[in-house]
Image 1: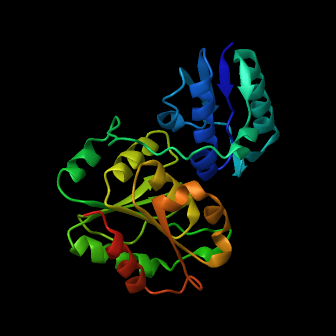
Image 2: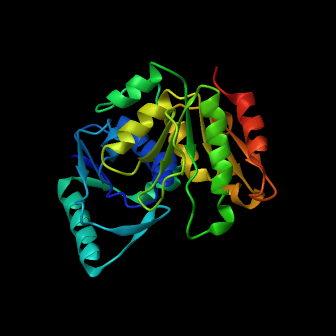
Length: 271
């Protein structure tokens, strides 16, 4: 009987760190055809299934860990239809599997996906540094001032690195104009996730102020550094299998200066 993973409607970080590795584990132990149902463009991380079924673009919801809240009655009906579709296709593996705690699975080789001529031109020319500087509208306490990010970007561009910034559709671009700076890669869009993983896989470093951005860098096999206050480190500290793959710098608050971040990053840059 076919196996169906999903539909997945949770957070992207949970998808990368828990759901996707657990699905991989089950898929490796289960014979027969395999399907996965989830967000548009995420097929790139489900190469182990026979068919990936993308959500309709009109399906809108608010993700929260391994579950979601549909935004409208129409979205609630669509989610019900996706659940029915999954049940018809085969044996459904639900999001409850995220508690299985299976090994986080980064890419095992350099990844060059499709539609990445621009990325190829960059990685053939100079080293990349990837950053996740976006501002959290629902939690202003965890925002690092934009002017600090500008200083970091300008520092590494001057050093000859190409800096790429990643964010979401609600984020605004950094007010920087430099030939060695690319902004904004919206990695949740259909083709942008493919571009983001390619860039991260070949970059010298990824830098995040929050835990969300670190998972994408880790999945791409990247050296990753995240900065955060102690109260926000519990989930990362509890995941032992990630400890050897990243450095989490605990800060008192988000008022630390750019030079502090630069000094930490310089020590760990992939040469």
